[in-house]
Image (cartoon, rainbow, N blue to C red; front, side, top):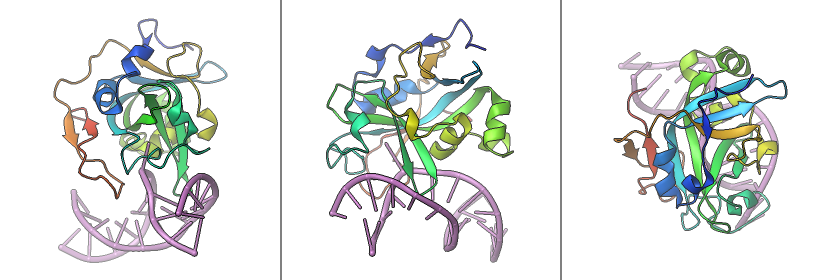
Length: 194
DNA sequence: CATGCGATCCGCT
DNA sequence: GCGGATCGCATGC
């Protein structure tokens, strides 16, 4: 009904640096949702990307708009956007208020609530439950209404937590995918193995 | 396994 | 009006 007692909400200070610094540190942390009935669905983050305000591929590159306003809030704010007419993608804001930086969560390994993920993902094979940014949101039931939630607040229905597993010491670094600008920035990180 | 394409809406130009 | 921080299925090796 609740996450294991050993899991700790990630402190906001851990998200207060620039996105390219925070992103690899989020590998191996847990994205945890708690439903109205107390049901917990969680996955371990294994792939992330960084986006900053001076980054042509970032939603914040052309300044603040109603859509991206959450990116300018404090670190730990959740920014979920809708794209391609059918997919949602979840980001965790980093840096300082007004920066317009965030880390896109690109892949999770299911940890808890796998049955709920299977239902939301309509019986897709387990390996495909949350191995993409749109799939994460579908598996965890995230949409734009969750934008603005604080993943560092122990009372939030969407949280970033750690079970003590450290980030990988040797993350695989590469260029971001699905973008057409600034493809040269090596701002994608993956945990080894899968 | 790699590549290609259609689906389907919203935000910004 | 255009194109997107994607996904899933079909096709062809």
